[in-house]
Amino acid sequence: MQNSSAFQFLALDTIHESTANPRRTFEETKLHELAESIRQHGLIQPITVRPGAEGFEIVAGARRFRAAQLAELFAIPARIVEIDDAQALEWALVENAMRVDVHPYEEAEGLQRLLDIPGYDVATLVEKSGKSASHIYARLSLLQLIPEVAEAFTQERITASHANLIARLPQESQAAAFEQCWRKDWKDDEAHLLPAKFLSAWIQSNLYLSLADAPFDREDQTLNPAAGACVTCPRRSGYNTSLFSDVTDGDQCLSGPCYQIKLTAHIDREIAARPELIQIENGWRNAREQRPGAVQRGHFREIETIVENPDAEPAAPCAAAKPAIIVYGKRVGTTLTVCTDNDCPVHDPRAAEEQAANPAPTMEPAPEAETEEEAEERQRNYEQQRKEYEQEQERRAEERKQQFEREQKEQEAERARREKLHNARLSTFDRILDKAPAMFSAAQLRVFLRALVTIDPYAFDDVAEHLAANDENNLQTSEEILLSTIDGLPDDKLTGFALRLVLTGHTPIPRESEIDFLTEAEVAFAPPQPKNTAAKKAKAPAPIKATKKTAAKKATAKKDVAA
Image (cartoon, rainbow, N blue to C red; front, side, top):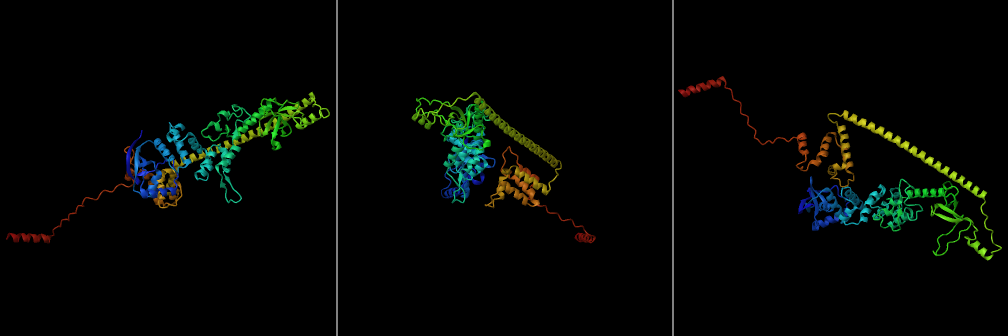
């Protein structure tokens, strides 16, 4: 429960913006439009502030505050509230969400800061902001963007729709999806941004894999032990339906590499359990990548097991029917039954027609049953092919193992090198401390100041703002301004600049519990001169010594008076 006061007019120089404000960007055109409106009509909607060590901190109304500065007002109406940091951040988020111009990425950063506070979760944010859970999840997902995409989004080179579509993908797939946002036609000098629907279609076709069509068991944790079962995996659309509310085509896998690992493991298990399976490559690929013994699509006829009339009797199998599995291409991993006889009277319509037209003359003799010797030969060939395939797999596994070991050694060598370098730097640090002088030289002080401002450049924003106050076109960061200033200072100005850095933040009136460093610095660096109000005492004239001649004249005068 926060305490609040009635509206008061506060001087602009007593108000400062909050560093926790989720809004980071302010469109200059709209700020000037609001400033012009304020000049004509005044600030109609007061801002909300809370007391702070340096006056009043803005809780809600940073945009109105900036516009009032542009309008050159002296004071603005404000409501003063007593709230803690979490409440202040919450107020700022809700207020910005209801207004215009707050960037979605900035809103996401603010929501995440609230979630970092104990007691806040998505349900709490939904209740307090009035936004839906899907909106909250969509905003938070933006923080998963890779730097390249996040920068393009904050610079508004892509829209929020593009950013949301990419943010839901694994980071290893985001760069490829980002490239699909653009197209350069023959008449274009530069690539132009495509509507988000084109990106959505590309993702659906290339990155979303339907788990309903997966040939493997989605509950099997052993197909890819590192990832676990699909039903509990967070990299699927069904894991967070609020975030993927637009995905209506069932549960989709978002991790292509994991899907392929499970698919390969499933095929290997099926072939190992059923060596008689005919392996079919349902597409062309390099011969070195093909599985040994696999045949290309079209060599055999697939026997349909699904008929239009479910009550009809299934087609009778023929003597040449064999079980098969697709090991590559469309419907990979699917097991099926194929007919190995190209002229099969059961499954070849042409042969069936000929047999029906000329049953006796054209009747082909039934294929002879496979002899025991032929079966043994076929089994030997298969075992030989299987052995060669396993040897090839072992060779590749050994290559991967050796590659892994090389990478491990390289990483260990790199860690050892960095540890050695770190220890050397620690020795340098200790040596610097041991040899520290009683007083800094100008060169030493310059190094000290450069190191100081790079520890936390935001701590010296006020100093940087003061230094760049007269240069409206200065686009440097606070750190760049401070470093360039230090490099350009004369030696005799370094100490004064050091004092400016550390004392600027102590110029406001301190609280009762705070140390008054400004007063301490005054005593140490600039002791006050005593006031010169007492009148100087006039020096008394020195007494004049009487000479002998003067004394004789005085004696004569006394005798005359006596006479």
